[in-house]
Image 1 (tube, one colour):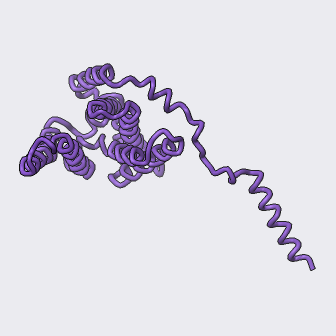
Image 2: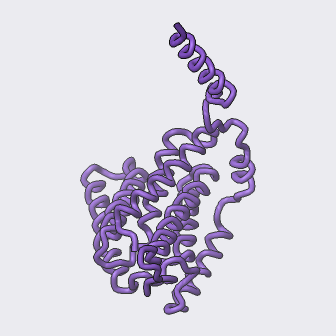
Image 3: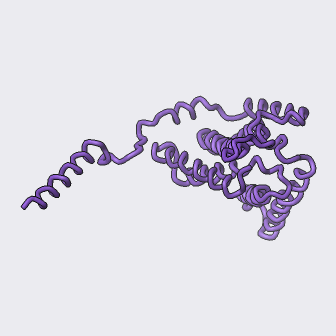
Length: 249
């Protein structure tokens, strides 16, 4: 199984590359690119949220608590006093950080329902719906969900790859427990996951306009205009000619 640093680094790298490509194509603003990098990186830690003593779980609940608290404060700060705001913010953060974490530890097992494609799809759609409720654009909603799902998928793929011992040419006992559609050991929870996926998919913002907009990559440039084979060949040819002239007596 890949460790915390491997999951964090891989998810951050893939999310950064994808966000940079979207930024280069003119689909998103720089601040949105930073947000998508963050969401994708968090998605890379998400499947280990069911591991009671993992670094991923502790980091996720700290960040998740902080993010939801910040969002909550941003919507009520004009309606309450500073003292009330501090009390509400503290209650929100510590409830998520400790109570929700403790509840999740009791009802989940490592590499169970949370370590599956169904769970990261459910989490991605939940993010889409939440951001939609906050009033952001459809593209921002779907990209946030897509990046979260992508980060989670990278996590599952890494764990599956690490289940194969290439040095000793053998497959570990954990093979097949990482990249799975759902948990067969928990049919009730798995069924509930698919039910919630369907509900969220129906109530999510329309995706057709977002897909049409994101399909336009005419403005995308992978390399600068001056970096082409003809110019490089001409440059090398000039260097060789000038070198030969300089060495000719």
